Length: 542
Image (cartoon, rainbow, N blue to C red; front, top):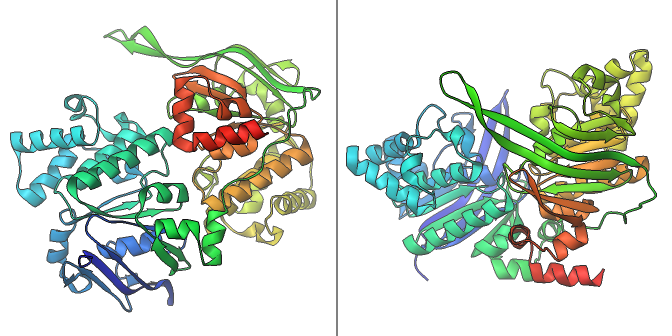
């Protein structure tokens, strides 16, 4: 075997805050050879990203330091390199793409300018030559009609297109190593598959090595040559991908491999009362053009959709970004205006104003995708969870409210004594439990769950799925579950609606839609998320 392109030896990373020093990475070692993909896997807080950022010394110094370790690239220890030497390596020999392209790209600069800046900095390339190279890169990463995208700003591109632009920027100088930090976590399953195919092709075409950071073991199995499993800042197991998956040795590796959401929802009970029913729901956003801003067309975000949802049942809504999933949920909960009939617990609410909906809000609740963004950082957990009680049950005493908060926190698996803490003091999974508690304290009949597990580690996803299933059984809840993660949908949903461009492409029971999809679009979604042959076999066996 050839000599390693990159060798990380006994790397330690320490963080210093308030006079306290803590070790985030504890003696990590691994090699990356030319053309090889090495995956760092583990849950949040395991030290994956800190290790990756250390390679290019991108940590916040002096708050971070390296008590020991070497990072040897082409025979040179980057830990001892000067700032000028590191600038020559960053973006040139070793490049990096990040998890969230919207925050990584400059919102004030066009795509052409952002890629051109890299070309000018490292290659002195300007003008027509830089433009030609930019178009070549955009074409290479699969951006359609790249000439029309040069002047576009990041907010004008989809999530998949933004990630492709980030990859184009990373490839601009033909690097030896690409560090990819959770590059597909925020993307739909089909876009994930496209990005992974693109990275595999680029690796093959350019002989590029990769350090791939992820918590999704399904991606690792398909993509990586070697795996390093991290926990609490240490590599607990490492080896060839096939060996790790076939014969894991460490208990933590076995735990990660078994962490996929399991079980199936309860069978549909047609005797249960209908909680939410909708006919021909439409949400059209006007397109205004010309000097007088006349309406010349509409964006049909939701276009003629029917929904029936019974108590104790879950309706899964799946589709790619922009398909209208969340818009449908917002229309059903009357958080945006819509056309068509919507009935909630026997009341026709389609014409209700936001004020008229207030007495019903305690019966319908929403749990959002990002628990950190949906929880106020200035309020403690007790106040966050009790906020709905202050509005819908203002006659409760402080003691009664506090008792209800403590009870619901215990019900969602949190220690009630932590209710005086603030959101930043909790992990992502704990914050999502807090968001669920905030919804459950009002004893709702219907809960809209908008991508509630997409930002969580696999093992935490499984825990939240189990919690949602238990709460549904205990309180006979009706769920509208919006997600692009079809494995989670399979574990929770009785029925599924597949949406594309505002319309229903296919709908039916979960077994039918997942196990035997009829439409090509549905087949593409399922193929991106599952081994279809295995799923069909499982569906036949049920």
